[in-house]
Length: 340
Image: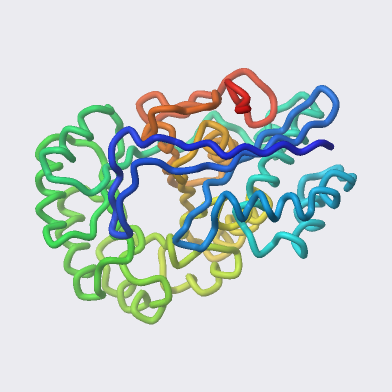
């Protein structure tokens, strides 16, 4: 195999604000695994919040390029296991390589990844569209720009309930709310009652990541399901979420790719937990990888390409929240222009 990597700056359609900060552009890391006439594409958006940078990903890739290019594998999990001792501390790089391996694996067989996994896409969940924190009139305008059946509302302000009430006056769509660790136990319980009456489907990550004891109190009293995000980064976190959350949000970039993502889903299902998959700010390559796993999910947040203005790739896209799959093998995505 021959590996090529690209760092591309994704421009935000609007300044995107959550409780952790504001961003107007995001660098994404894209991998090509080339094998003869076939190319497998993978992607992961590094997150400075976790100490990961594109430069660090490139440096680690170059350090282990020989070990990656020379390794012979039949199934992507074999490559993932081979690389775990070498790059496993950087889940983002491992994710980009793992997605590229799944893409290449399916292309070797002339099938899609979901077909290779034995999945049926005839019944899949709709994606939400995310509304970042802003002035209420601007949040309403952003919501009306995209006609979706489900919206995820970013919260963590001193007027969260007012935001939900104002948006509810403008649409009958289902709401999901993401507090991004900004609430207390008491706030979460109180908000759950009021937001349930406002048509909110679930609450995502209300408390700080390590507050599993607080979450056990929340889950005992809440009127709504509560989904773990920052509290469930890798597969080792799933057991800690049992009894503390109603479900988990799997993010491929954070957990290390499709290989561990599938294990996280399986473990959650063993304990009758709901499963969501979320995206980063990413191109159609990362979004198309998520789409391959849709039949395994209860909920999905895969609107990343709608939040940027310069998608460098083509692949699975959303039509009013419904995933539309191109007639192409692998994950169905490719770079429209190869960066120089």
